[in-house]
Length: 387
Ligand SMILES: Cc1cc2nc3c(=O)[nH]c(=O)nc-3n(C[C@H](O)[C@H](O)[C@H](O)COP(=O)(O)OP(=O)(O)OC[C@H]3O[C@@H](n4cnc5c(N)ncnc54)[C@H](O)[C@@H]3O)c2cc1C
Image (tube, rainbow, N blue to C red; front, side, top):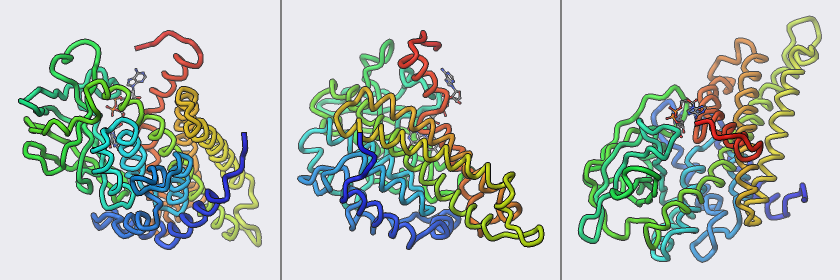
């Protein structure tokens, strides 16, 4: 195992860091508070090829792996721009399409995902099913050559910015018993698809939605893949990229918070000539958070390396652990940063409390810390399934 990035990955890291810093956290917050999106940043990142780093070159991407996309996620977050749609569109949707879509679907969608002109969001969560996707109630019924989709989805990110939603449904003949999922590419303007925006306590330019699918009529080629058998592997194909990139976003956010806090505590003086950072009650919590973030980064690197080497099962364990570690570390880092900044920590100007909601959500979504612990208990420790 090597701890070094390739020279190209080093260059990518530097270039994405520079891009992120040109926009910065104040840009991200201003967009969130005015109800706008980070359109300029997304478009520039797309033009520079950063959104398609993991997409094969024949579809307009950079031909790299999830290590490269994790670098993009981490560095933009470390610059104060944690973009959740990187996890949804290039990580989940592009991977699923590339690995299990038809050639026609790849040609139609991947170039737009690579240059950022298109986004595809992902809808699995449902009000009744929650963490238990075996209970999914969104049903796909045959309609001539095509399909009719009905159901409800919740907390779906970025529907207002996307051309398509990748909807996870179950076919009518599997509406009871074991889930046989089927994935559909549903245009966001499809007749019968409506949405309502959820009010979330997260300062973010990206929004979450309730989706209602009321007999949404779809052509045969809206089904992802060559046949219904593509559904289950396609669903699993998105999991590792999702875990790894969301972990990278958490690690970047943790780094951002620790950097803001360290700058402050290294200069702020309230007791004679000493900086507050000279007091161990201030510096140790920051140092502890820095250790946790660095440990999470190490696990992200392991997970991404295993994934890019095609070792999906091992990447699954490492990716879940990385996601858990980064979620906890990001929450700790932001909370610690707020604390050591004192009153300044709660201001918008210092730009750390603005991340409290996002890092809190990172312990719940896209997979909760409890479901990861269930996975580790069962698959690593050999315990009986508890649910
Ligand atoms: C900001 C944000 C963005 C999101 N974006 C998307 C998106 O784009 N697409 C999408 O499909 N979904 C999205 N989600 C949904 C997210 O994936 C779910 O919220 C998450 O999977 C948890 O599901 P739930 O909210 O239904 O919680 P529930 O399943 O109701 O669980 C509630 C609590 O109980 C715990 N729990 C449940 N079952 C068990 C068990 N067996 N053992 C131990 N603990 C358990 C959970 O860990 C959790 O703490 C988003 C959520 C948020 C907050």
